[in-house]
Length: 396
Image (cartoon, rainbow, N blue to C red; front, side, top):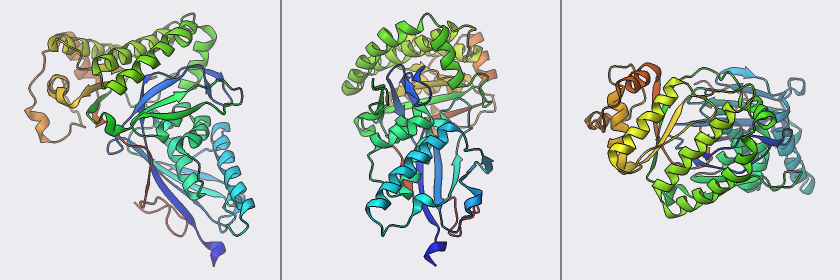
């Protein structure tokens, strides 16, 4: 019977790592930022969320909507998730009102099942990929015709940086200035194919949950940091302009300088928060020293560090400089039980530079795994379903 049919849609969504950081809200309820930001979407071969959205008239209304995240029930009663689902349902309901022959999917309970292939809430932008996948999967389930930029306004209400994960390549989140947030959305600055040589080496320093969440941390900064106003009025607008130009011209040295300066600016405002917030640790700072040493030895800028709200180092470089960058870290981590190195050819890389003994020791003792990845594409539909045809979680 059609009333028992289970409707399903699956999508994958990527992680993005900002090179001009988002930090601070001008409206916490709508998740409107105090500044624009720009990120690189990373390859889903290495970092992605897979989400299946399903609904059916046969799902008991008393159970309501549900989410299974990495095999465990997850609370979706929070205001952010509810804002996303409410907006998506309203758009589906409008389609159903315009065409009474459509099944009333907007009235059915949702069963959402999601899996990450990386640690959740560990400074790896899991919420960005998670909300982007949720919004895109439900939009596909509801057969909405909204553009990625339109959907980014919905994903933004779940997690600010999620709006940038609706696109691949190089992506800007325009802060907008309207009070209702209708002009605060993401757009694609350049496709991945524009600058496909971009690579990223992620040093996972800790897979533990953050001590201070991004949401609470940024609001403390807005309220108490003296440096913050200068960052949002002067530093970020200048960095956005330079970064967009660097990407257009594929100018890595310019890209790298802005990436590192903006990361430093962001963490300076965190340290200037009262009481101060420290997301980086000694291992993070050792990674900075290593990048500085690599660039000095190369005689040009071949590597750029950036840190989100956590201690993990993301190091951008171009494919042609793999030996100088990855070779250095690979040899520094020799003897440590590290996973994530790609293919056998990694062993043939020469040591780009012998790092300072203390720097090398901190990195070797503090890095738990590495992720080698590259610029990648945006969300994509998939036939891999986490919900079976009968509406139960698929056996994996």
